[in-house]
Image: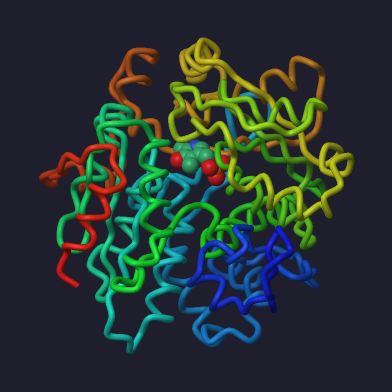
Length: 432
Ligand SMILES: *Cc1c(COP(=O)(O)O)cnc(C)c1O
């Protein structure tokens, strides 16, 4: 299978080259040249088996083709249960059972196992530079920690992540370094982009990113939607809709791709925080990036969702078709708080602030009489955001075992000014 750029000015690329490159040379995002169709959508026993079935057509012709089963077994080593909510027959798709208690673990682990296999036998180290608002950095660090041939440099905005998120970024050591940047997430992202685009530096060191535009993160995120919807469809005959907490639009874009491949997925609704570029677009306005606003759901604080270009391309650039297939809502901080406070009694769960946006969207649909089956996508464990969640629900929220283990390790990060040259020097000086 070949991959083309959303901007149409780059040559078609093999999967292996697209995985290694991240961004297409014309600045666009890689998308499959054609969307393959699943012949069989009957449920399979494991998430890993479902992942393998979905990914196989994309890996035809890849050097990794014969390793795909082993890669899926490694990346999807923990489940993504579809948990019934108390009351109305609604569900939560729990994506927080991995090592850093957020959905990004699945794709980060898949990307790591793929790059490690492509890298095998190569003696030059690869430096992964990742700007994070909290969850991406931890998932990438966990996935690459201890892998020979890779080093990870994490940049995160000081004071803008939860204390447990900060610990989860700084607890790795060895081949992982974490830097507290005196600035915003946008500063971190600008610095990462600047070094990744620096030809002089790239001539001396092999640098790559691991952000949500990478195909190696997009494709593996299809698996849990296909897996949950196939089981639901087999049991009920109905297509399960998903309400996806959305920031950069990577996770929801994967749901849309799995749907287009034929997985029995119902409607897709994007739940955004106060950053409302997508709700404005889906409400009929022209797409326009907005300045980023800080909210309680910090992993979704994105003013210009980087995968929008890819989602639009999946619908052939047809805005009417895209708006007919997908909707989006914006949920403000006061509503996030109120949803977290009432969720234990109403739904029998404690949601994280991101999951709360989806839960509120579900409540609004039900209040309007919507009777379709929906699952809210639970993107992170609430214990990661204890300073927000615990005062609202009135009790301690203990971290799951993998997160507890990481919190028990010592943390170590360094300070870095929000300055491109500071990062450039740091990477140029690192032992190569
Ligand atoms: C990253 C993240 C999101 C947003 O996912 P996108 O793929 O960027 O839309 C939502 N919730 C949590 C907990 C996250 O870490």
